[in-house]
Length: 206
Length: 134
Image 1 (cartoon, each protein chain N blue to C red):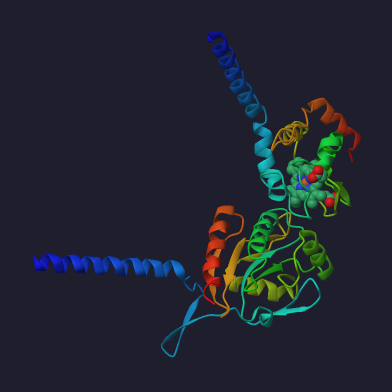
Image 2 (cartoon, rainbow over the protein chains, first blue to last red; image 1 turned 30 degrees about the vertical axis):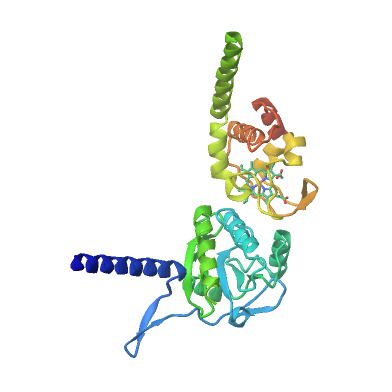
């Protein structure tokens, strides 16, 4: 009788633990950034230093995002393939978190030759978004292409394509410690819906 | 009572037939739309806020049908007004679509997402394309 009681208590305890753990996992996003070892310790790599120019001609760098989370993507204004859908989905994210100061948006052009500051400003104004909330940046081409890699995006200039570029359409979530915490395929509207939930979880953290 | 039933049944059969019909004849148009237009104008024809004009409920599509084949084949540059809003982003030409394929796309657009802009004939599309030939 008492062993039965004991094992019942034990299994109840286990159940409670399992519930707690699963709850925990839902409440916090993993760190997805690449790692390396430093003095025998595992270190998560951060988004490196950068400095670009935003649509209102101001400098946009890491300090712009200090103490905030942000979502980042790569696009160009004359893109005939995946970008309009990605931008459409970025706009959904913008609308969802319009009044939440903890989140900013950052779109990098991969076509700095054609996407001047003026052109990016026009594009952003057409979308009707605030320049201090959603930054559209241009800058040195090599810097833009290099940092794409740090955001889990691949950008290749390919003259054989009619548009001249090939790029993957990931939207990436970065936390205030410059670590990547979630990403999704920017063309997949269901994935973006789940991604918005991920953002909410992160914003609850700080 | 039973004659009422019969009428209802006949209507139902007709409705099913008609809807089947519509689905069939715009099927190629739909596939082509998905492949050549949906990237920019979106699956539901709404476009992209401020930058790419909508096709659903578009005043231009409704009133300037003869212009659409030319926009598709030769592209469109410069300011263009849709539903009172001015858009000004270039749309690249899509020269690989045949006259028939363009007809099918337009008919798909004319009958989708609540659009009811009528049926455009192949002859009319061919004439329009001749007039804007470059």
